[in-house]
Image 1 (tube, rainbow, N blue to C red):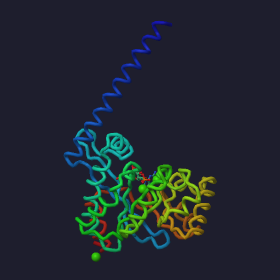
Image 2: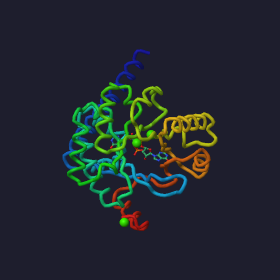
Image 3: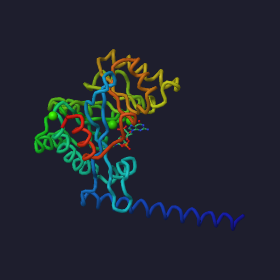
Length: 275
Ligand code: C2E
Ligand code: CA
Ligand code: CA
Ligand code: CA
């Protein structure tokens, strides 16, 4: 038994060493990627569910790594946050996205995701404004998505940030709604423009009874507070039909399309004559 235990110990040690090495390679890769400009905005369509009309795009970060290929944000965003480079990474992406979105029809909006770490930067709103001015991009076409879990942070900080953004003319959406634990009082006290229902409640409708209840509850909450709603994770026609029955939504999901790089979006828009 002793021998067995020792072998296992060696195995764990080996495994951990392996993981640590992979982790530090990722860290080095991300730093290099920032320097080499390897981060690329992808775009997901946002649709008016009632009419099927395109209303804008959500920018989703991708890392075009020479070693790993296209890497999803769930892998590199948390590491970039820990390394303290998320602000820089985000600015690199937003700068590119504003340049892309500037070419689209002026009624199409651009949504960007902001990390809770960035919200702690007292100059965040200023920096964003600077990017918009440099790109000559109108603030009223930009939407900033803040996740519900941000509200666990200093609520005063979030409140002043949201009002600075709104003073600039940017809209602010509460992302991943339903997964955090924000109170109704918080929801009412912050001047959000929209809430986004997390895809975990949407993508298995109508079979998912619990999801259905939650979507209905959030819908009436939105009605009560006068907050329009976006539903994420619309993967098929059944989900779409169910949502249409509940009210007016903006929607996103694989039914409409996967996130795509700027050149594919441009082709799509040219066909729609909205470039
Ligand atoms: P999110 O903001 O909830 O973005 C939606 C995610 O759901 C995207 O994953 C998108 O590809 C995926 N998705 C869209 N439609 C469907 C669908 O019908 N079914 C399913 N199963 N999934 C769908 P992605 O691109 O991997 O992004 C993951 C998360 O990473 C995002 O979740 C967002 O929180 C974060 N993220 C992305 N870009 C950025 C960024 O630039 N900055 C920060 N801080 N976070 C980002
Ligand atoms: Ca989002
Ligand atoms: Ca989500
Ligand atoms: Ca046009």
